[in-house]
Image (cartoon, rainbow, N blue to C red):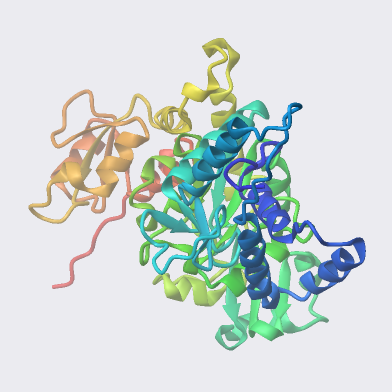
Length: 466
């Protein structure tokens, strides 16, 4: 059995690939049921057996490469040279291996060892230790998996952990006003039950974002989901266990810092999904520099005081205020509606049944462009002096949300976004009865996917100290 010829087709992506790979590693022609049972017990011991598995593959591959060609007697007693020739040609063809992938430097199809398996291949260690797949094999698996995904009318969803689905802090970083979190007799413990986890073996405490369990359950009906974090693997697996204790949603699809192919960057090159069918939820846009069209930026979840301090916020955290996000109106509930809408547009039968030719990024762009459609915005004292306005992230954000931006005011302008009520453009907005709002109005529209009441974002007078 070869990985290239027998890759899974019944369900999705790395889970099936991992299951198949394990089956390939476990399959031997001379194994009896008792040996299988003993092997299964040893498999439960963890990653320590990976080297034994690799050695077993090497031995089996060596046996496979011994080709025995027996003479075939014809009825007249002569030997069939035709059969010999066909078998020999087949053996030669089988010896020409394209090396679809490697485990520990050994080809997973032909068993050939190589000192350099990094050329034209990508590491998929989260699927199986020391696994690398060749670019052609990755493309083949993605094509095959996409067909299966489309059959089940799903898309891919890549989820960040910290500040997106949860918030963690060290015990030593808890503020004085957060001491109640460790007090089992505090009245708040009932409200936090099932969402606050003390992890003494990791010296930390983790708070799950409100609505996260409902979010994952509903999203799983529409998406094949991955976790993708810049955290270490041990941390990522522990958080995955808190979010998905039954291994229903993620299983082996947990990508950590060590799986990234670029320093300080996340990439879809380690996701076995076609980019046109992938959506991403993350609070940090900068790490997805190559995949911004797939990204939905999440408002950061700052439950702990250390989180606010990390990002320079001087206000008290949710835990210090003994408060939390809303289940029904919070960030995850809001973004779930967006995800469902993009999914619905992607599989809209009125557009025909050629789902393979569609692009989820285009659907996401269309939904986003409706948020501020019809608004014309001028900025005042928002950009640094001599900065090219069109290149500022707020200008580009406004355009992505469907607004039109301008550097000059005229009667068609609907909003002036300013940091100072005393600027000439701010005064013009007041005089002409136009909306005058601070930059947070734009940022809130981006996170909440709707145009919010302008009166909730007034521009304050900037006092100058003489």
